[in-house]
Image (tube, rainbow, N blue to C red; front, side, top):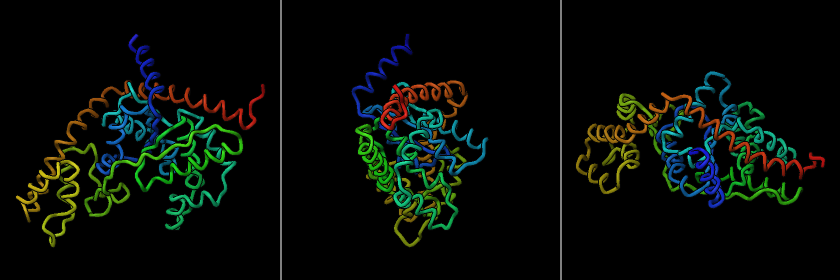
Length: 330
């Protein structure tokens, strides 16, 4: 009875609110830069929208070709989603690979998309600049992403300013399909996330897994201490700017400025203060994640249920698409 009532609540929620979709690739442990740059906003937004949160495992195949690693990362990201407060009672949490319509629609989009258009994508340009061999998956990823977004009649996609192109590609693709085959897809809008400055890593560069300069979001106390005490500081200023910028994510500005004024020039003491504040911030989320990890079946059930709901919604759209392009006989 409870599950039945819950589904009714979800249906009413879907009818009343705009649809929001976002996804994260399961490519390793998230760090606090990931959290403050995007994941926190996911949790904050879920009450105001009909939300779908995707584990973008097909996209992750561009980076990971190891069965065990992929398997573990998918489950870990599901834990991360739940530990930061995403609620499967009100949001759909699912794996991209559980909905075959994503790749089917991406292929249909490929047939109306030109190579010069895809060559303007940031991911392609970045790979080309690094003189790497570029996989077809990297080259075509904007069309898979367009399919991710357009399948669910998505109204808004939360992105940082530097990721706005993803939504622009989806809009362009929707407009082109609609022009060729008739009105089918909504034009999604980017929801630019609250202004969050790039979070510096322990070496002063932008925090990134590829640089190995992160503070993991669910770090142990020992990991927090080791990471913070290794933060590069510039002794020429009045305060350690990298330490201060990270600390600013956790404290109100007045409290932060008072702390740094009181301990001006005492870099070790300021790092120790950051360690304690990070422990207080990360500790409860880490404990929630550990508790969720103990009930593996419950986490898998969240993904199973989310996949079932997402498939049903995606298939409704694909029925319309197949009919529009001439693949359905009546």
